[in-house]
Image (cartoon, rainbow, N blue to C red; front, top):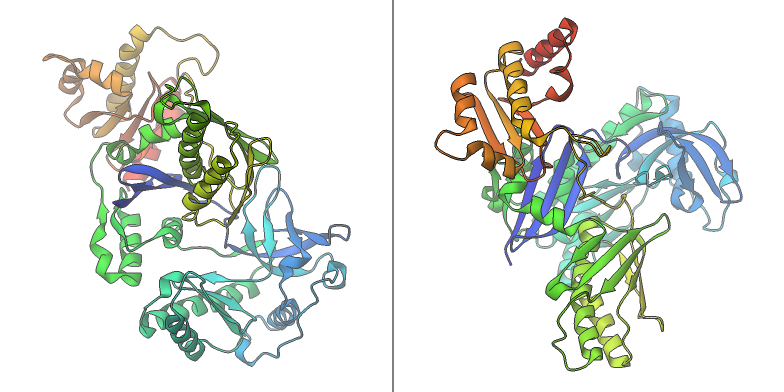
Amino acid sequence: MKSELIVDVQEKEISIALLEDSRLVSLQKENRNQAYAVGDLYLAKVKKLMPGLNAAFVDVGYEKDAFLHYLDLGPQFSTYSAYLEECFKDPRRVPNISKFKREPDIPKTGTISTLLQPGRQLLVQIAKEPISSKGPRLTTEISFTGRFMVLIPFSDKISISQKIKSTEEKIRLRQLIGSIKPKGFGVIVRTSAENKRVAELNNEMRTLLKAWEESIAKMQRSTPPSLIYEEDSRAVGLIRDIFSPTFENIYVNEAETFTQIENYVNLIAPENKEIVKLYTKDIPIFDHFGITRQVKSSFGKTVSFKSGAYIIVEHTEACHVIDVNSGNRSKASVDQESNALEVNLRAADEIARQLRLRDMGGIIVVDFIDMNKQEHRQKLFDHMREIMANDRARHNILPLSKFGLMQITRQRVRPALDIVTEEECPSCFGKGHVQPSLLFTDKLEEKIDYLVNTLDVKKFTIYVHPYVEAYLKKGMFSIYGKWRRRFGRGMKLLADESLAYLQYRVLDSEKKEIDLKEESDTNSSTSKNHVRASNRDNKE
């Protein structure tokens, strides 16, 4: 199976698509400046206690208070708490955990009011991002995640990934980690550490320890709420968790991110450094690899799959509901029971893909087509467990109920990825009345004239819908050719499948987007000067 990663870096967002034999199986999107991401450390302050929930609401700077449950304090909370007190006493010195006295573990059945008080300062880590109307969920059981291991302060336990099957390798890793880790730190050894040399593991251990020491030093200089630690690069953070030596290519469309990913791959898998490649074509990277089309067909309420069958996906506050329909599928099977089984098996394949693709978590209820035979119901259940085995998120699948419903729980850490595939009309913005489409080219020509002769931008690229591009470039004496002769050869016109009909966007020579939708209609000199200054800053 050919596996490829496609990284699309935009000004505000990073998207990473995983392709298997050119088929989209996973899509992750993250804001480049996103706060409150999983793994981030914050210096926070306890706002109020909720004894009935055995939890506290904590101010981390988010619009809604974050949630910290007693069980998320971690068994070593007493040691953690004493260490923080020592840190705040003398901000000029970082206490050494290795020499710090270990306190007894807190009981699992304790109450939060005996450990916390309003106004208390805590170093907390985001365990779940803000989802829907809820704030982040926190933990004080701090951890630093690397490619090969997870470092846990205030613990001495060494855990080995269950996916490492070799007993000899487990013993080797346990002894190796025990010899290089300092006292007072626990380690979870990840699957990717299998067969790695001591130098590689020791190098990552030192990197994680340095991140911990720098975080404590920054915490001592900060006042709550403050961000203490976050990943250096969102792209590297995303790739770290999904990287596999089986990847044949990693394409990146931005030079800085390309360098970061190349350096990271060179660090963890030097033999695979050559798979990281910089994409430099003007055609959008997701269009080039056919991802945009797959996203349009795979997201939305209705998703079709083989032979006319389809599923309907609904999202609610409490759960996700998926309904399986045979549609206008031709009845190739002899009886309805066999036909239902065949549709359900193919639907299970698509549902497993959708769960990964949309990163759906929480409770998922699937309404399969009714089947009367118990062996068919068992076959569907076994098939679903088999194809979900490769899902990295923790999940649990229950057999079909007597109503034909399958219940699935899947780990939910981030909000589900819900991409709206219906396009808003760029001319009327949902009002129902559009400007004459015949005049679109005249309007676009006015915008280009404003861009070239008023804003003095000579090199730029205009992206339009593929149909519009074909119309503007058709014939020997095309409209596009006429514009190039009038406005100069620095102008390019390309298709972008992500755009709606009669929608366009303009990028300058440095790939910075130029907003012409408002500025060209503003006659004030102040607005023009602002745009000139903005373009000048981009060039500098």
